[in-house]
Length: 474
Image 1 (tube, rainbow, N blue to C red):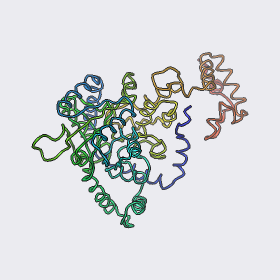
Image 2: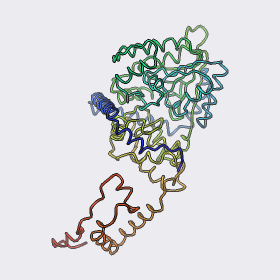
Image 3: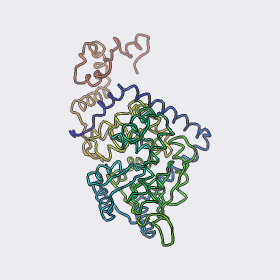
Image 4: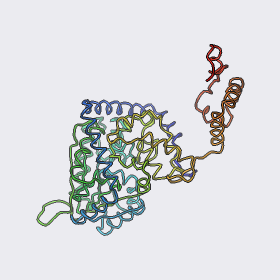
């Protein structure tokens, strides 16, 4: 057990004890689910575009090594400098090296979950570089000193009153107004000045097109376009799974992502970045860098079953429909990716010793699978990770970290009991007679009875009752 492992159970209990937090999430998730359902009211259209997007992602993953090499070739031809990072430390070192060469003092960032995975902000601040999140939600959580609670809507855990109080505390001249339009305008004025002064802009990548060397970035606020065009240097970060083969593969993803994420028919801005400013052009960065991060993804890719994790387009729809996420919120996971996709991705990246609790934070209701726009079998992968957690030597980092001798003995006994009719009859008869006398503190029972009422054993087995009605055993 990793001594630094986040305590999901304790964090969940704290979240459940916060009625305002629960209310914020409940209202937000209800609204998002309703809007998404309206966007996909035509089930035939949903089925068709979903199948197309899933096929795009599957085809890209089937050719991943080849497409990544092609992407590097086309990006380089376009004037984009490509960097490969095996770990988050490598990616941070690459970012710092670019910033130092640019003599950068101020960085503006668009939304990028990969940089959350890297803890890039903390690294830059330790190096004396000011970094400012420009997505409104990211700006709010950065101001609040917390992490995003949702991959699409980072500050969804806060309501307007809480944000107004935060702005009043943190921003000079802010008025006490619980008015979303006023708060947005205030943030816009602060950020506008930073865009103009920034030395470097950073962004994520929604899709990187191997065929053309184009980086596709979608967003709603225009901050992504500002980050990628105003500062003289642009650094884009992506996980290696974000590559697609052809330009025509991008529209299905663009069609599904905003509708699945926020229930809006289309995203406001689509940025297609194909290189630095050329001679004679009046705007755009003079340098564009692409940092491609592995951080365990190659290991995921190597396993045919776990590889499906990499299909994700980061829409967050699985979170919006997850009964566990809706109850406890994103911070309970203490991870860059919360909710269902986080439960299968983070344990594979960070290891089961540290993140072994996450695959168990699931009711297996299958809601995430039913709404996933690229058909990721999340629940199947969750089950696989539960097995990996107790099976030493498996494919996942720290496999077997949650193995328990007691649990292993119990399951061996259960298997032996069910393999022998005689043993089954003797065991069930004994449990009928003696089970209710067993104390709740027994090792086998206490994990269950810590949070639940001890089950009561029936006085007679099903076979007894059947025989009493004249139904013979088979």
